[in-house]
Amino acid sequence: MDTAGKVIKCKAAVAWEVGKPLSIEEVEVAPPKSHEVRVKIIATGICGTDDHVLTGSFPKVNYPVIPGHEGAGIVESVGEGVTCLKPGDKVIPLCLPQCGECSSCLKSNTNCCLKTHLCEPQNLMPDKTSRFTCKGKQIHHFLWISTFSEYTVMPDSTVVKIDDAAPLDKVCLFGCGFSTGYGAALNTAQVMPGSTCAVFGLGGVGLSVVMGCKAARASRIIGIDINKEKFIKAKELGATECLDPQDYKKPIQEVLVEMTGHGVDYAFEVVGCLDTLTAALASCHLGCGVCVMVGVPPLGSQLSFDPMLLFTGRTLKGCFIGGWKMKDSIPQLVSSYMAKKFNSDALITHTLPFSQISEGFSLLHAGKSIRIVLVF
Ligand code: PAD
Ligand code: ZN
Ligand code: ZN
Image (cartoon, rainbow, N blue to C red; front, side, top):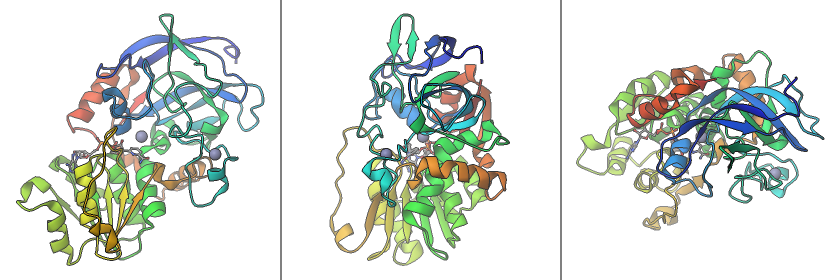
């Protein structure tokens, strides 16, 4: 392409500082260096985690930053040494790298590559420089993929080729939300047929958990949210009943234990709140219930709960992007989508032009959307 090797000027949404709304700017995007790939983003979802970046509650973010991590696009150019991709390939950027070499990548039982932002900063490219500038200032990357930019550069360990026929404005959800929720049920909890599940939080990720529980043939799937508008979609996707904790005088965990006899087999926290996490754990079946923590906890918070909940045999598990080793699994999830094995399109309530990103966040805050996809 004639842009290869050159700086590209394009639109991006920049978070200049914590607590300020995103502002759409013209940014300069430098060409990819060795083992890097420059991608033209075609579509990107808005995830609850992007909102955590704007409010400053996501760990290890440096500002100014270009957020966004649920994208799909087309390779524009590749740096030296990139053998797995070529210009024109359809790709999904991965918010969790799979370097293929670290001790986690070599283990079969974890997807937490040691190059993830929890271990290695992803605010700059691995060579500690940024590919983004705006108004003469260096802008930071987010999770190495920054999909709220029309062009973005990422290491080749954080992007994967997908089916050429995949609709990018739909499969962008596999970069985070859908994969996270669906995998939380199938990989992390390993929901058994005939079991009872409770899902706290029915946003895009929580509804994907509901879809995963249904695919695993759970017989009872109880959706819990403080916004009753979410119940319609939850039931459409597989929830057998829905509860609003505000309708009960008792704590919701007591309601769930009463409803099920001895508590649920699996509880998922998909809000990102410590109170709902302890409620989810306490709603688990004595001796064998499994609670999966999916929501990102508030930055710097400390968890406090009665340790007897664990002593008596319940399990509390964390879940990072649904437990998928992303480079291996995302192309397979896209193939399953193309084969109509699940309908993740049902999560998309709005498709907006990228220029309306602020309206997208307003819809999210107002609880009026499930997943919003922005298209360039
Ligand atoms: P969302 O904002 O679309 O959905 C959150 C839902 O929780 C909304 O429907 C709210 O109404 C509901 N809610 C709020 N408070 C309560 C409450 N007290 N009780 C019950 N429901 C409540 O967000 P999302 O679905 O995009 O993301 C959900 C969380 O998952 C969020 O914390 C995000 O950061 C996290 C996440 N984790 C991973 C991971 O790898 N673990 C990946 C992606 C997102
Ligand atoms: Zn690795
Ligand atoms: Zn996300």
